[in-house]
Image (cartoon, rainbow, N blue to C red; front, side):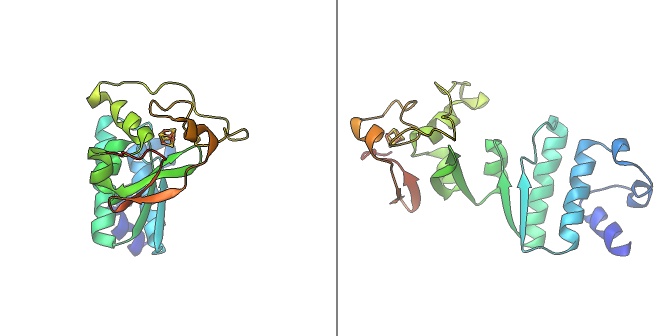
Length: 188
Ligand code: SF4
């Protein structure tokens, strides 16, 4: 109990003794998230995985989640894997970002490099689709995972696609210190 209360306090949960007497439905989404984080940290894992930790949170709770994960990263020194569609969370908390498309990594690099000067056409599309950048939608739909297209999985939606893109699946290759999966020769 002492350890649990200590962790709850460290993860910004006010009045943890009182919280221990409440049911989950009596807690806010942000509080439940902090409790899950406290439970996870209680057995001192080497790797912490958080799947969509800001999904469905209001702006205040989202800001709390950023604060929480930044604290875990800085004070507990744990390796964290955040799975997210929240580009700002990735930028604020993560050191490295791997962009996934149709089940595979298409770009891997330091978070600031990827989010400020993306190289892969899909990553560029994601950045353009951010509300801050005009909410430009990506054209087309993701392919079915049970019937992936020949060649590059992104070629049916890619504005840079060439003939080679529909024939040969690109491998990850080194690109400016990171990794990228694209045939495009003149990547920015
Ligand atoms: S390999 Fe071709 S289709 Fe795929 S992202 Fe690169 S340019 Fe676009």
